[in-house]
Image (cartoon, rainbow over all chains, first blue to last red; front, side, top):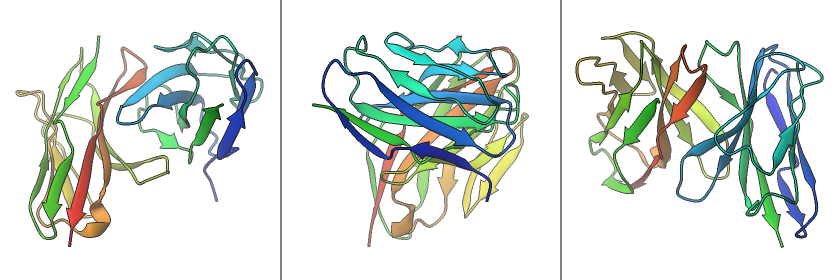
Length: 113
Length: 112
């Protein structure tokens, strides 16, 4: 079955630790995205990537980093510089950046203790 | 820049009631418009879409019409069910921006 797989689903970390969230897709989509969702709020774009080895900052990139070494993978690292990292993180992909329909993973819930 | 404004929630309805969730947008050019649905603890799923003016998207009894003159894309359903309880997001995607813009989401609760 084609789709997007995010892992882990739940993650607990201590303050000051870096954390990497995994996102893998087998849809052969060019574009991939990371969003952050806080309770009762909409989605805010962290980073996005149109093609391998290229990515752009979204609206709230500070304290986060990404890589796009393979077409199917777009991991997100939440660094210790992110002041309030506890949130629900969603990975998405689309066929191309101009074909706007997004396919989402199930999400990863990060809690910093 | 692009923006999407959704009707504030939460919305609580009885089963079989009529649903409307308002959505208006601001964008340059001719965006595509979407409604996504999110069930508790899950990611978003595409509910319906429309890619040009006067298009009507429909799925699972939900409908929305792309109104360019009023820059709106209101979501409607004639008879809601308990299983429709979820958070609904209006979104747009414009070629100029190269990314999607989401509204804040509207939480719908349907009571039996």
